[in-house]
Image (cartoon, rainbow, N blue to C red; front, side, top):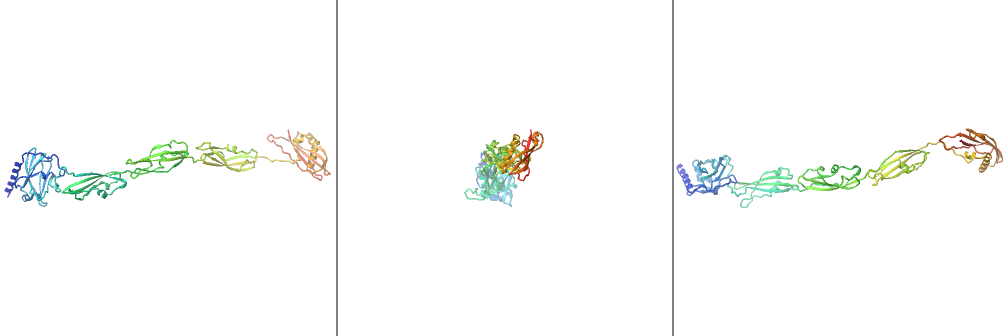
Length: 516
């Protein structure tokens, strides 16, 4: 039997040499898949040998380990002779020819040959095959690396697919929703299932960026992959929250950085704060007067989405004028009363915006220019052009600094008048004056005059009179006081003691004279 098989092998080889004229053009590219064995490149040797040869040489990697694996169904009846049959090779360009014994794996009903070519091309000059199936493969590696049969894949077969799926960050999708956009089918168009091999999207942050998902399917022992790039994008611009009109006192004008902190900014993706705001327009920072000004803020997120908002700022005057001056004013009763304007002169009224252009009114005035001793409240109100105001409460102290004040009845003569009168004129004045008071005075005569020779000598001097009042005789006298004049007294009072009376009572008239 062994001799018969050897004969068949030699017969197959002989027929190959008859049909193989020379090396045909080989394949200049490596296979797409792992299988180098193109069944369409095999030609059966004529006759009943049950062997085939390669029409075109196979491009291989020199000094690389290769293995041919054949299913028992592919070998057919040849599987009964394993251990005695071989596969024959010829390398190019060296033309080395050698045989490799086919080894059996009875457990898995497979046969295999391991070899290592030295040249770039090989011809299989004799390959036993009586196929009941087409499970045959030539691949790089040892038999222990065998992972399953795979058909030879045509050069034009698309093995890997690529796609890009854009997703809005604000409308994120689940992995299952994404997978629903992908479809797999067999060459006839019948849908087939596929699995997710890897998924960066589901395990990632899903923030804007690129995430790869890989799907794999298999048909006819050929695995193919679909590489989907999920591109998450952000098209929503940052939101600058409108603070409304910002009012700031001119005297407390805020800096631009302080204004920024009054503005809030948010983004759907990025964590943003007021420090990320950019000022693109500004009439506020140079403002020095009350008025309305604008600042335009811009915000840009990491996806280059941008937004802007113009904020209105009112510089306002909230402070009333400053009133500077005493809390108390002191006056003597002998001083001339202070007018409103004189009281104002004690104070200065300065506004931080309007300067001295300030209105001043008295809202409380208990003083009313009085010279009566006491403490009087006055409230001064200063109002600027924006009707801001401040008040100041002050007290007017009116202090008594005068001595006693004397007054006289009409019976007392002014000293200067008396000096200009003769003795008789004084008597006549006395008579007339008493008559005006309802007394009937007559027969008036001077009994004694002490004053006559002492006009310039300090002292008290009397003029004694005798007269009749309503028919009765009466004695009276007039006292004249002569005093040295004081340098700080401008007014000398005079006094009368007693009044004319009926019944002989002595009436004393006192005149006070300033010693000149």
